[in-house]
Length: 195
Image (tube, rainbow, N blue to C red; front, side):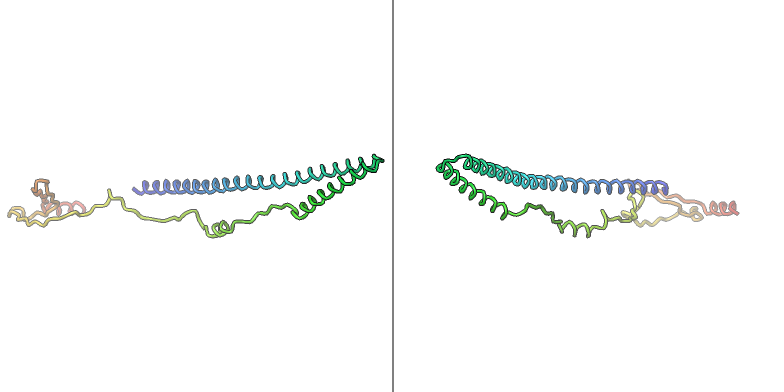
């Protein structure tokens, strides 16, 4: 019985260790999912900002090239009317470029920040274990006997049974009582043998 109990306790320990491993694995899997989602979100934000910077750089390059072309056209034409037209176009283009540059400057520098979820920090500080260990002593119902009912019977012994002791008694399903008596001399013989 003791050996069975030891084996049962060892099996219970192994099952608890396995359950703890599974709980830990679930926590790690959940954190991995959160991590994956947040990194995807971060990548999208950074890619969007980088695309915005690239578009601004392309537009500035295009506007600059158009200004250079207009300047060359006005310098190459000796005709005053052509120079005036180029000058007017340059003036409009410079105004467009200045407005665009002001918008870029006002927009400021792109940046991305990360702020820790303080609820997670509080949760991490509050967790002291993955579960609670309890020590229990259990009685198995198949090893415990309890009295469901009892009856009191008066038995009248015949005179020739007076030197006997009641050893055991049993009631049969039909209500008949079977009694086992042992002679007191049997006890006396046992005690003599022991001596």
